[in-house]
Length: 501
Image 1 (cartoon, rainbow, N blue to C red):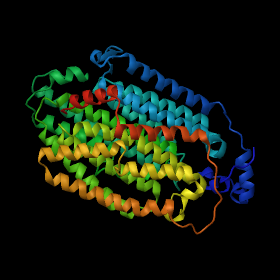
Image 2: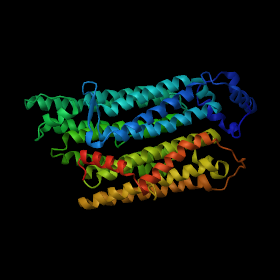
Image 3: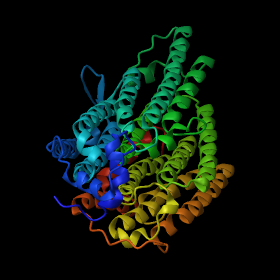
Image 4: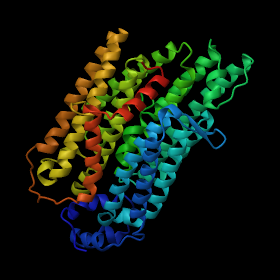
């Protein structure tokens, strides 16, 4: 197999920051090209098998969605430990759609990445274990079971983060695992506070979500309020909300691009589901203190993201801080509730596809240029026309431009904020999003269209990697222009379950 165009520039990625022997370290670039091009995949079937499993999973849940009327939901399985309701149905569809795109990307990268070819079997195994835990976690009908599956997804992803191209990927992986464990410990402490509240009120608490909703006291006491606050604080850390957001930019930047996409576009959603489940359980109560907590965390996250985006020098880190911003918008929308809730759902779904699109395209840029630094890239769209265009489209969608779903979602959230009369939150959100827009454009647009100080040949890109990314773009446009009636009804049902109108 001959070296493909751009392989010379892909060397820094394929070495991935791992410790190679001294002989490899002193090879010339030409020799390294031959090593990279001639290194066969140890398990060539692993990539296609991953794609096949992902496709089968998506077809399964799509078929279930088509043949199952929403009026017949929820349906329970495994002695009522698992439930298929509107919430789980929505996120099963979204997560498995994104997973298919990531699987195609991983399979297509085997031929150009020595590290991926060498470790493909372990990566595929961990990725499949992660997706099994994700699907079961989304369907969990027990608060403790959902908590356990969130932790299990983190345990599956930590070894994948350790295979990244940072200077010390294992340190980053341990840091990620520590943050994840700490946030879940806070969540578990909150669950224990709820148990204490139920004991003091003489209520036998059952952590099955449906039964829990009928068992908790309508008039919450201090223990119950403390439990809710701790759970939201812990899950807020998993979502990258300030103040416990520090793990997110470092992990997203250091992890392999496929793992960054899994973190940002898939695992993020199970924490969102956990927050939704809590809101579904306690929606009959006065949770104004929860709304205030979400509002404060959301506004603080927007401020942090605006400051950090201005200072970001890496395009992957810039995307990561934009994810912090997105979490802030979600928290503010949930704090308002009612009319903004549908917009929050649309925003969550849109951002899953936006994040996957951006991180997978960023992986392509890293493979060609060998760096994550913005200043080292210029005129990308002339060297990689397709990837450069997709990165531009993803950036526009991330910033909330029409005709993408994120634009419609932000308009619905802002409309809900205005209807609630919270002009301070409205002003804060508009101001911070404007700053993030300007700072992101100042970094990204010269990188894509600016004059290049070094002439690079035009690189032909594989159609195989193009299909899932184009699929993401189509979904984003449909969400912004025309949402099919069955999907719209599903979104509306989920919105109503968490207090939306």
